[in-house]
Amino acid sequence: MTNYMNGEAHVWNGGECPVPEETKVEVWLRSKALLSGSAYRYAWYHDEDCCSDITTFRVIPPEPGDAQ
Image 1 (spheres, one colour):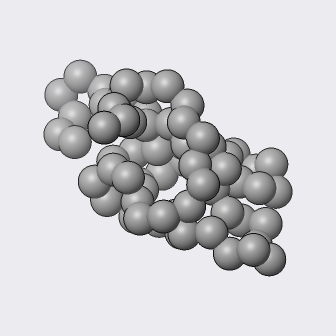
Image 2 (cartoon, helix red, strand yellow):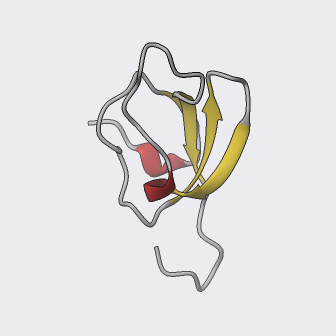
């Protein structure tokens, strides 16, 4: 099982969100945009005609004292 919580960038080929919904993530989209926020804000499944598919993501480590 892949440890997505390790702070490293992971290639994403689509599917269910791999982390808890409230997890803070950075996502790189097919359009080359870089976004960050809670995982629930993003569509993790891929659509062949969509430039907003996630191609890579990284979990943002919580700040000391943050609950995640």
